[in-house]
Structures are given as structure tokens and as C-alpha cells.
Picture (cartoon, rainbow, N blue to C red):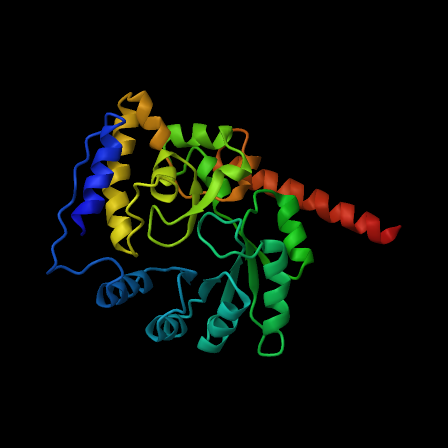
Length: 288
């Protein structure tokens, strides 16, 4: 781990009265994305009565697809480009999660509206693979629109971050409500790969500051940010008002549609009602 990056992180947090406690990285221990560790976790997963397993950041390992077939569990894969989808279909995945650039976390550069029909058209001559549309989908009407494009359903993420059951902090949920869609930016500052997250002092420091040493490749940048965000969240929760400026998390452009914190059950009910309204609207248009 370059000391330059540790020093930059420590000094950045110190400006906001946050003390950084680092986690020592043992070179003799398996690191994030270690292949053997991943396979062991897959074995643990398939020992439970799961109904679906999904892979991101590349084509699933052959062993994952074989385990899925053995246990009769569909294997899904996230894609951000047509070329990715073709590789996934060739590898034998059962479901494609076609994720547009609007999505939170790691995403590509093509919008959901363009990507979903592009992928459906590209894979149709090869074999029938269900497509779940993802990226910026926060309402039942958007879900209906994606299914009108040919998707079998929707895969949602950010909408659940503003629920009382989510893993996010109360401070982050407050920032979600105040944010616009343009506040969800792609940055390498958290993982080392372009990932959409809520803009903050942290993202600006890594992406825009002239003194920034630049993000490290994954997974090293993830280790840097993991320690930093643990410290940031602790400080903010303890009442450090300045720490709030650094609080961030992965979130999609749909954050601009968040206006309140709800229960997960309320979100499900709204999806159902809005989906039904959208379908009725489309049926009325067809009938005219």
C-alpha cells in the first residue's frame, strides 16, 4: 500500500477533525477477490436454500455456473454493454441483469433506455435469456417502461437505500433526500474502478484536487476507502458536523426521485400501484 495514498487520506480526514485508524494488510493472507476464497464462499452459498446467485464485474467463473446447474439455482450476471452480454450468454448464464449507467455502484456509460433493447436484440439470435432491466429504476412506471422494451422484469437497488430497513446511515438517507440526480457521480475514489456514488468532499478530493495522487487500482483503493469511511461514519454519528460533508455511499441517478424515507413494504406497494397505473395507461392508448 503506497504510503503517499495513506498520507493523503489521513491529511484529508484530519482537515475535518477525523482521526484515521488503518487496517494492517497482511501480505500472507488472501486479499479481496482471491480466487480460492471466492470459490469457498460459493460453496457456502450453495449449501443454503438460495433461489438465485448473481455475478458482477465480469463473466462468472466456470465453477459458479456448474454449481448453479448442479443445485438447480439460476446464475445471473450484470452487464453494462452489449459486448458484455454476448460473452455472458456464451458462458452459459441463465439471466442477464442489463444495467445502464444510471445505476449506483460499478456501471458502464450507456443509458438503460438504450442498453436494454440493444442487448435484447443482440442475444435474440443466440438463445432465449431473460433480461432484467437495471439502472435508475425507482418507480413502478419505470418498471413498466422497461418491460415495454422487452425486459422480463426489473432489478432495483438505490430505491431500497432510502428505506428504514437499509444498511445506510440516517445521515446518508438525509443526504439522499437533499440530493439531485446530478449529485450521483461516477468516481474511482472508492474502489479504483468507475462507480456511481453520492458526490462528497471525498470524491472531489480524489477526482478534482490537483494534489490528489490518483486512485489506486482495485482492490487497493477499496482498502483505503474502507478504513476512511469507517472513520467518517463513526465521526458523523458521534456528532462531528464537519464529517457529514464526507459521508457518501454508492447510489444511482434515481436518487433525485427520493423525497422521503419509507419502509420497504411501502416501496413494494407503490411499485405495484404505479405499475398497474402505467399498464392501464398504455392499454388505454392502444384502445384509442
